[in-house]
Image (tube, rainbow, N blue to C red):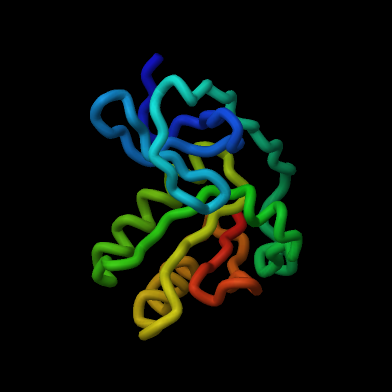
Length: 151
């Protein structure tokens, strides 16, 4: 069986994750619980992504600023690591990632920008403020180098 980037998969003995990158010799880079792991194709089985129902109605100002404190819900979202990128590269990567999350029906996502410097974190949060599809965001209480976004 063959997988492509973005496919939801289950890795034997480790859990469910998302294919981030296809490598050679039937190997894949898979994100599982915020960690990237290289696995072979024989360890993977496909998983149907869970589609979340969205409530009707427009955005409420009180709801748009709310991000749940439930760490298990935030950890369930997919993540992107922007370390080592310039601000311009990171914003381009972030836009593509957020579009993918919206199309997949994800409720949460984690953006790993790092703690030092602050330019990347400030640019990411400014971009999140500009996006109408983002309901809210906050720093991860366990790691100030990560922003948790809700859609």
